[in-house]
Image 1 (cartoon, rainbow, N blue to C red):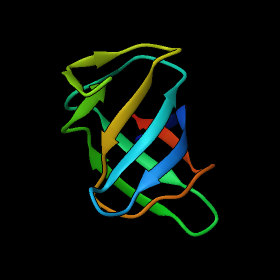
Image 2 (cartoon, rainbow, N blue to C red):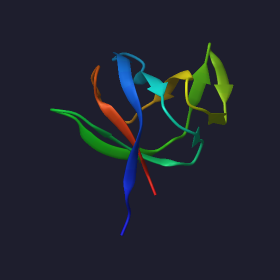
Image 3 (tube, rainbow, N blue to C red):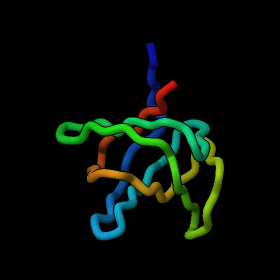
Image 4 (cartoon, helix red, strand yellow):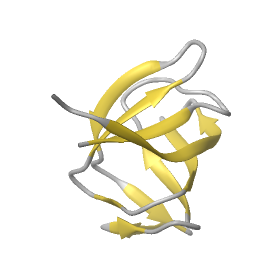
Length: 84
């Protein structure tokens, strides 16, 4: 059975490009499985693209603010969980 733990919060969502700005609270890498949950949001996906200051990165750590390519709409305040 899989479990999940909070890994960050959505601070902004860019509808046209499908990118969420996430304040990260733990380590996250390309290929990790995440779930995004909120009052009207509930989907999971693999992490395929992350950027810091418009530069692609493979890993991020607590304290980073990242642009995360997402497969569905999310909203400010939604919680990002890392699924293990």
